[in-house]
Length: 424
Ligand code: MEV
Image (cartoon, rainbow, N blue to C red; front, side, top):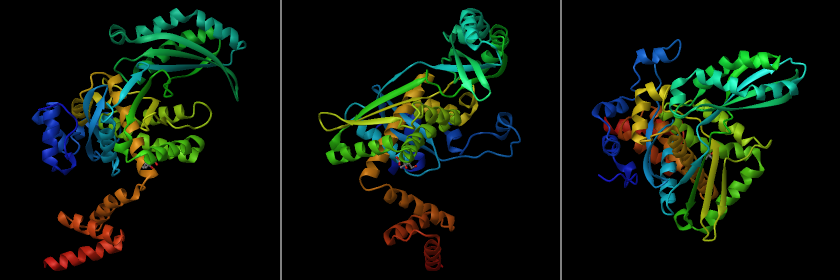
């Protein structure tokens, strides 16, 4: 079978048929397919070892976004999310991006920053200078902590030292610059920070307090770009609407928060599916969006000479393939196999592309018909389920409520009673 992610009417297939397509695309074993279908696949004893006070597990719907073409390679993208429309929107936008060649990405490498805080010294600027001079000793100590990372070409590569003014006086912050290769890096970086702290304390003549990774991962940036054909989008006025929507987000933090939330709908859904630390992803994205002092969009939209919409995204994406849930959660492992990524960077680049696609889909819908029509259909289904509808009753009730534009619990109950009365 072809390895194209452009699967005709994937959404129209039933659930086993969809899994079959994905299984063939990704060469999943029967066991992996079963793990995905079991609705969680996370055994209680494993869950019990992952966090504290475990009483169960909490599965989410897992969908597949189709049509993604990133750097000329096809990807079926697993997304775990409770919100309707997100997977469909990503697939739709990715389809539009294909017309002009899909997504093209770049990155700054898998580099994280670890911070060691020293305070209370008399001469912070002299301490800064002394720490810079002690760089080799600090790097050696850091790299002694993780021989495997060094063997793989990673490790602490540099230090940066800054003096900051705080409400309790000046502080000297030593930053370890660590290439984490295919790890997200929190464990490696935190271990290194703790190990070098005594050196920093001795050299700076201050007292060391915090030793911890920064989630504002400005050295782990990922970028993606795609051209969205104006005809595929629905005409040049739709392109203009998208650019107006972007300008709104650029000028107003109240809109920008929602603009970026839409981007993170995609990024977090892939992150969750692949066992990533999604809190770190959110912290990194939103702090990066605020780096200029003004909260800004993570994407930019322009119109090219042909009238097409050109979208770009840039944000830190700290993800890993080794260590963490990505390496132990059976569903995350199967999802990474579906994605077929070979490195943490490749995963991050696909995620950035999904974020861009998600943003395009949202802006296009918002600038044209709005998002409620699509949302309401799915909302109606949820209401039907809430009142106890089963099987085909769900679709019948949802359909009626949408037609009548009365998507309410009381109406769903009435319709369910009617259907039940008819049957008996
Ligand atoms: C909803 O989850 C996301 C949107 O609000 C994003 C946006 O407004 O850009 C549709």
